Image 1 (cartoon, rainbow, N blue to C red):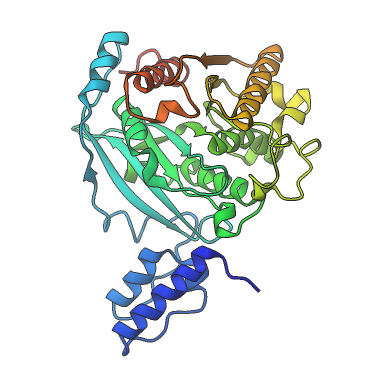
Image 2 (cartoon, helix red, strand yellow; image 1 turned 90 degrees about the horizontal axis):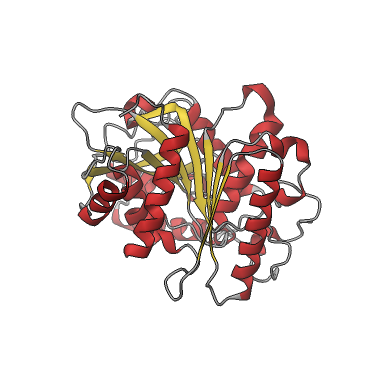
Amino acid sequence: MSVPIESARKMNLIDVLMEEHPDIPEPPEEAAFKWSEERIIRYFDRGGVLEADASFDNVLELQTNAIPWEPLDRYDKFIQMMSERLPALASYPSVKLAKVELSGAGPAGCMKMRVYTPEHEPRASFPAILYLMGGGYATCNLEERDFFLSNLARAGFTVLSVEYQTAGTGAVYPAANEDAMAALCWIASGNHGDELYFQSSRVVVMGDSAGGHLASVLPLMLLQRGGEAPQIKAHVLLCPGIDYGNASPDLFPYFKGVDHSKDQLANPLVADDSPLSQLPPVFVATAHDDEYEQIMRLNSSACTYASRLRDLGVTVSLREYYGKPRRSHVFMVQRGPWALDATVDIVEWLHQIVYDKDDV
């Protein structure tokens, strides 16, 4: 039986640490499959002391006080653009980052999260954005979106970027869906907002590319689960992959064997009108000047999806960005004025949808 790349790397790490610490008992077999690399290192640093497996409701007990908030670099250009375009909105030049490990969460038993929060005294809680980054369901490197997500935090949101399983770690559909749902339930549970400065009653789901696909299906998953499921205020889809059915299977092995013409959680375009008409407000952004045919197909499916939701009465903002060579796939997460301008578009829409009129 082949071992996922991620688990093989952890096995090698354990072997190295065992050689460095021969007196420490070997960690349990599950360590290579369910523990993060940080947890494995902590096990050896603590002399082989096992951490209690945190339950889904108290996973921060071991981490929050131990992981410091790190200051992120200021980026005053975004603050300047915010003040020029949206002078009525408060902005927060300084942002802090926390790196959190959710032990016991998700199908794999462990998920990583990066939390970006505005620095504000006295400390305050802000609406939460669950962010799901793209990577073609092949990779999920949380650090790649630091610049974009810290700017969202500067606009008055606590952003929680969550790792999910991909084909790169041996996962196949619907593993990422379940990871995203586990993260959303954790955020909306009401148990962790005070520790990480977010409001669990005001949650937005956002993602780019493959993460935009996840953000599009999460509301449908919530409807399937009924009244006990958490509620979200809005979802934001940035250059989302809505219909992967026309894409080459070799490019997206995560969806191997999936019938995109029938499964609405793989392709929300095939969902019935009834659930689609109940979706929360949605912001859809596409970049139409990408030279790759596969990306242009995804853009087309995103526009079709937005039009269908609008016809069903859903509140929709469709922003189609043009302008070579700057408006390529997920350009809004990059640096530069063309990206910052799109970020302000997103922020303006979110404040209209998520914030109450009397909010600062």
